[in-house]
Length: 211
Image (cartoon, rainbow, N blue to C red; front, side, top):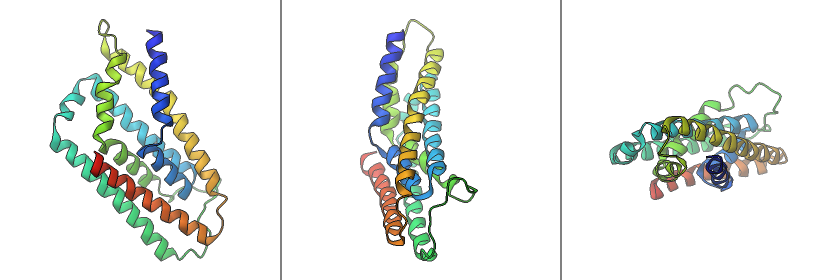
């Protein structure tokens, strides 16, 4: 049993470290708005993972995977939200005029930094990809002992997943926000925000094209 848990932790670590839509989103939010916004995005990713663990534990995941309409709604809805967020960045760049520095120091009031947008963007990214639920349907069951009750095992795997993935995402957020603090010129900040918008559009396109 412990060997399976250790193996799952290693698999989870590999998936967490591998750059993907969720990681790129956390990096993008952190570079543009700071560590705490990136941390909220990371929490959004973890929240969806917890939901998928629950769905898998109760067998609902298989039913959802067989419902193309539900997944199409998630996919296109998530892509639309990310596209709207990218447009919002572009509009903010145009209206603000970049007269002042955009970076908000970490010790200031973090309200109004886009925490809600970061949370919803992360949820949209993680929930919109059918590949995410397929991973839960195909990989997670490999670590479940059929001779024992499945629900407690899913709970343990979920806890391990959080312990492994959340620190990785937070590390990405910290590294990205620390790097962004080096960009003090208006021109560099404009380029950084433009890249953030392009990242969101790229994730939206990947969701639509690749599912």
